[in-house]
Length: 358
Image 1: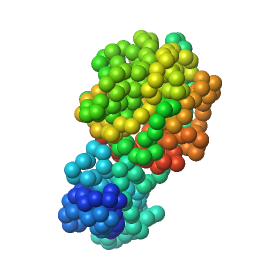
Image 2: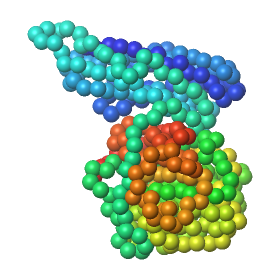
Image 3: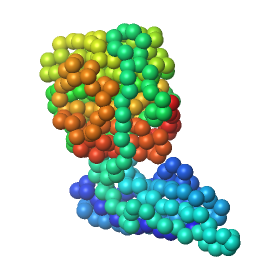
Image 4: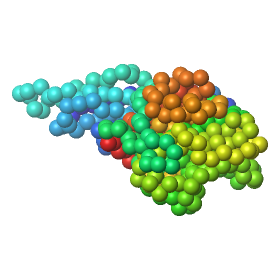
């Protein structure tokens, strides 16, 4: 068998005492049975305090040759939905066993990382991997676009699966905003969040792009609703659709496949919400789950015009475009981390979702 270990240094950047819990997460073909955390998973961190966590790896005999990976996640035990972080991937290679000595131990060669560093910081994640292309759609109320072959996406079950994004400072801003996503909805009933900030009840606060009772809707809510909406064409169920919701400082605007479908004068756009962002559910989960497939989620801290929305819906983004503060292609095809390719680097944590491709 092959054995190895990797030590992560974890620092508390919250500025207050916190009890943190470490979780070892296998990625791809790695098995959870191979990974063991040495020592207590839950530990008390003083402000700016650090702990070291060692993960031991034990690969059983007969494991096929290949590269495997895992990462360490940290959560604040008192507030796991909003204060968590996902560490960098640690990769290891299982080489071919050397014949003719079948009882010889397999060497376990570490690749890419000799140590990991995690920082417990609200919505701040440290790994970066992956990239995303966009595919084509047909605008207006006609037939929606089809995703190209071999395109990965995230499939949400409408019951418990979603992506946690936390409440990072890059996603706290006021006024103009653009929220975009490619979706393939399976259900239109009730409230089905696509991308949302909140909601919170005390005070009431939410910014959202969602499906509600058979309508696409984008807007904000502070006890009073500021939104615009349009009926979902029946042909959109089970087909890929590109949605963009924009607040331009004077109105909420909704585009479907690059075509304007709704616009309403409103006085409230993005504003402070003391709660997490989420993809596919209320921030932090618990309700308003989206049922269907989703990919290429983007958040901008500026209003995008129709020409930009229409021209860029099929574009491959680099992630460094002006005003792009969140970009999750959701095209990893494996893993529980949704990589943010924007300069913000606010990776998300995938909860109970499955990967698909076509």
